[in-house]
Length: 246
Image (tube, rainbow, N blue to C red; front, side):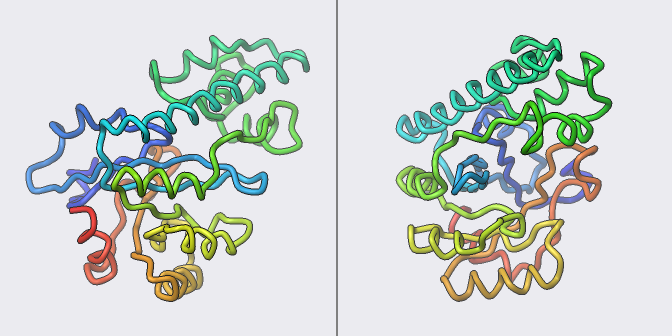
């Protein structure tokens, strides 16, 4: 799909996993540039926040230990979701959830949603979220991840470039200021769901804090993102970031 779109520089920022890269290095199109990246799930004042890390090594023990900590928190959360749903009379198991994930992949709400679909309890991922897995619904369990400030720190210690993902989804923009003070390097200004006013706002935020601007499609899969893979970004806007990671 990236070859069809003509994507020239890319990173597959899976949530809490670098597992794509051992095989991805051999799958890129000639002339494309690959940047090792990750999207770390974090918790901030009861809300979920995603921190991107780029230009990372694959074999840093300290960094991988933190990612494993997050993965274990994901398992605990998924088990609690299952327990809550079962208490309401919905017959799914943790094993049903595991079946919806690639073996060894980090678990998340979408896997619980797909287990609900397979059991005939929900009709779609959107229905599962809205009816069972959103806040105030029976199966919702708050995230238990590391803080975004710690994510910025561990990315930096591993030699990577940290950036806040899709800031337009934040509930409180003061986090941008906090993370910039904590050493964050970039801000995802270019994102499919950012409207022109948001792009302008985040450009200003990046400039004021001396942050490089990044771009991401937040693809996930074709059903989730009808825009497809990749983002068209002006060279001048993205070059300062690329100079750090290429």
